[in-house]
Amino acid sequence: MNDTNERLEAWMHANVVGFEGPLQRKPFEGGQSNPTFLLTDAKGTRYVLRKKPDGVLLPSAHAVDREFRAISALRDTRVPVAPALGFCGNAEVIGTPFYVMAFVDGRIFWDPTLPGLSNPERAAIYDDMNRVVAELHRVDHRAVGLGDYGRPGNFFDRQIGRWTRQYHEAVSPGAPAIPAMERLIEWLPRHVPFDDSTCIFHGDLRIDNMIFHPTEPRVLAVLDWELSTLGHPLADFAYHALPWRLTASQFRGMAGTDYAALGIPDEQVYLQTYCRRTGRAPIDPAHWEFYLAYSMFRLAAILHGILRRAADGTASSSQARETGARARPIAEAAWKQVEAHFPASQR
Image (tube, rainbow, N blue to C red; front, top):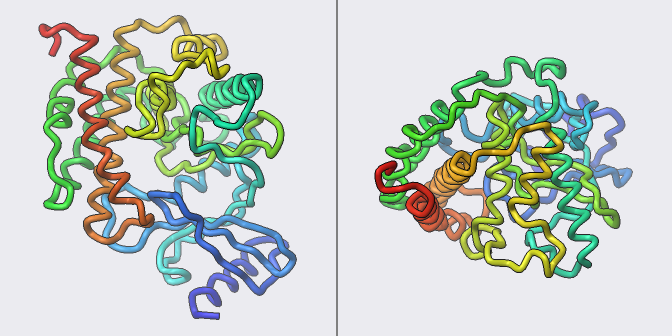
């Protein structure tokens, strides 16, 4: 056993109730951000470890401490999360801060069209996913101890500024500037809808960030809370709805799919169901288009950061360069959407 495993095993003995060494550690494949490992102890009990990547990181990125705080706070709510077991801020244990949570056994779907399932199964999975997102946005953030988890109000202005900075900091010879991003950076702040709603904001509500029951159409855990904060519910939901606007080749989307033939609700039905569950009035179509354009801009900024890490050699996935290269077409799709839904006088 190497020194890192010895230190981790000692930490697990001291901090995780019921753990018994020796420890086995195996990396999960597929993630693009915080390296994630499956831990198994002598009894066969499985745990999941999430850590910051090695190397120089962008400011405020890879906040594993915030992930741990969020899932700890939500444990007794109707939002399903993996039980949080322990956080370690001491980088000397395994090289960077990390946390450990319980392993949740179930299915992860990478393709939003859910191939291999029946139409009733697809419909039920989308309905439960919609329910879970609505439940998250209905949680009283103050009551669960997250009243100071972010700044309420003025969300879009602050976030556009944040992702603009993140994008500009990532621009480099290996991650060159994207003209469509520059146009969005100019356009978005001038078209923010006035609505200061605040909720617990997950930030990455993709279907592949949810674990579903092995046989039932039920979400067992929402994963990857790295980007969570207090924010606008429709920014979170619009990002969640991007599969209806992006294709599979752009980024795990399903735009152009015959939804009725698969039993999957179309975008408007899915949005209306969410509004009903959260008690929100119908959304102004122009506002909805803004929320979607903002979400594509934000996704492009995130992917551009992955491209920069790939160029610098600090990315946690072997597919990071390919994933990061999707930033440009997504930014271009966002600007095309602006051109399609807003007159020239508003651009």
